[in-house]
Length: 191
Image (cartoon, rainbow, N blue to C red; front, side):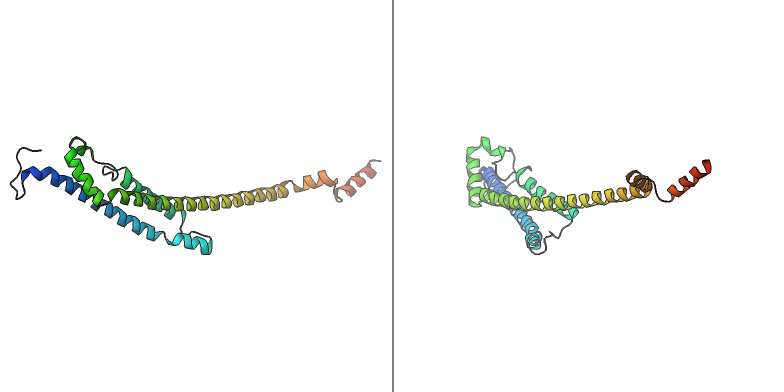
């Protein structure tokens, strides 16, 4: 704790306790902001299951779907991996059991851990939905690729028939009728 603190109405002995309470309140506020953003995200993709049911198509293109997935990953990172990890007690309080108790009591009162689990569950559901949509788009893309490959093979067969058709006909059925009279006239002249 700093030696010289600015004069305050509140006693200086409670500065760290007030810090612990304000830290828990700020964590709750940050979690509320994340919850609000996630609810907005979930409402923006809420129509996707309905679209799949009614039309068989998600109603989002590949790029939009990837952008939504990136947004979802950002939520999970903001919840679990950033400096403000909502599920752990900050390192500062480990050496101060009394302050840790203050912090934990207010965190419990604000239900931070249960709210964090709830947000994680919502993110997991949204990730599963995104996974299904990604697989659907991949399947659609693979189907299109198969059709393109079949069309290219058909074009190649037609070109081959045009180029090598007469030779193939001759190999399959022998000489053509036009060539046979020409050969018979050659034989008569040779005699």
